[in-house]
Image (cartoon, rainbow, N blue to C red):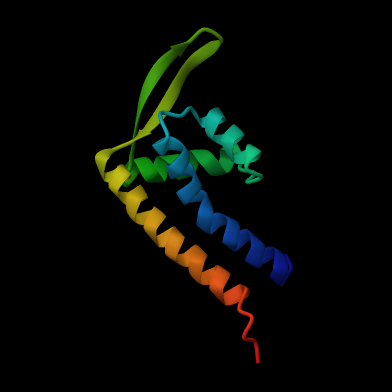
Length: 113
């Protein structure tokens, strides 16, 4: 993998957790809904990446889930934020906004020497 490709991959990995928590923070979400939301935002994520991440977030106490029967197949696991997850997302949002503003200021600086 080239340096550029590696850097791009690392940047994407860094924002996936935040995006997934944000999607679930808008209301309960089923994994395929999360994948669709991410694809719509041009952030491609596959099940092999999503499921371990959801498990890690659940084990960290940020998510909980419930099973719901489905008319079209097996029961579905719907994820939602715990109270700790809600607080974590709020803190993460603040950090993201600060970081995003800092990056914009740094990369759009007209005072280059």
